[in-house]
Length: 594
Ligand code: PEP
Ligand code: MG
Image (cartoon, rainbow, N blue to C red; front, side, top):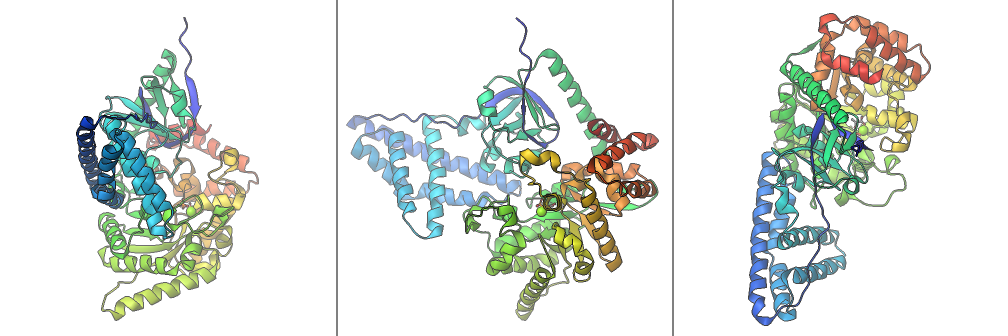
């Protein structure tokens, strides 16, 4: 019988590379046994439960430690879970239920957890209602230990496994035996989901947003993860396997070659120096970005400090986080962006109202100017951390001068308050993201009032073309090379130049080698990106001639259709006579785009 062809599932490739291995399905559906027991079995069931509590404590402690080592801030939430495990309402409640109702430990746990959750449901106070989630988490962990599945097995994955899951929480990911796991594929998640971030950090190929991979794949199936194209191939035939083994080998060779030169500066063939920085989401990533060749941090998305936790990070927690980033970012310093909550970046503990269209809603600086206490705390933490390194504060989603005025007044006020307490605060450049068409149109005005610009193409393209960046249906219309986008970029770069302020780009466009000649041609000299993209972008910069890039841009600006611009850029890459300077990555770029 002929072997089946590979079944191909398409999702979002969030961490590049290829992994080939055996599927390991993380099945979260627990079958909870429920039965009555005799009086002489009560002690044994209570002892089982006691053991489970001990094991859960040990597991949480282990996860907390590994998160801390990785510089991840989610450890705090786990402390709350440890406290809950020691709370007698839960532990004695279960032991009593076993005895009084004469039921097994799992059933008793289920009843007690349900009762506690209901109790929290009826408390008005938001803080206490949020404790409900902790009860669920702790109850689930205890149940998995009692039933003997799930979490315990996560640390005992067979070598060469591809983890297939509905989603992976930070705690799950920390528990994984990293030396055994080759890649991830999940039903849920997006480019900025924690799974995606972790996968990139660990350099594990990953595809997310597959919707039903957990239904299509079973444990033991042979699976290929194509993190470049965002595909998962299930039970591939020998030719497909051989094809992907070759792609994998080539990818690793290219990567090793690029990594060897990652620390070399990005100086173009004609001697122009390009600053290449890293975008980070967690404090621990500043050091790894530097190791990947980044010259400092060009964007720290601080909203990640606020995610996945029940209690907002206080002044001290934030100050420590910012100091860590500043100390580990290297001489290039760090551009720390104030809270960009809202839109697709949902933070449970900050949720105020349902919004029909959150991307156009109360997000980023609009939210911060409304919640000024929260914003002041962040500004104070930033200013207190400033002596630790070269800090630049950046404000997201600025639409016009009023917001700049408001932010500057707040910063001045917070600074004055600190100085009145005798705290010395060094001068800190205050810049803005250019990611709204209104800000781009006003760039000449704004440039006179701020210390620097950083162009956020992810949002700028979304709002310019009215294309929801997270909507699969219109993804093909999301065009960085649209003439309307290029005109805005040109205007912004010129405005910054005329005012004598630095302008960087930190949207995804900056991290794609394909666009780099256009960006240099536009006059950009500072690019910030996912640290994994740094070696390739630096290599491309070294191979390019800035004069040729300028000539290319002059040609492109005369084209009136996005497709024409793109086609011309593909042609340019193919024709570019870059000789020996052409790194293998550029060949890949050509083949991918042609
Ligand atoms: C952007 O919009 O380009 C950007 C860098 O910000 P974020 O992706 O965090 O919205
Ligand atoms: Mg943005």
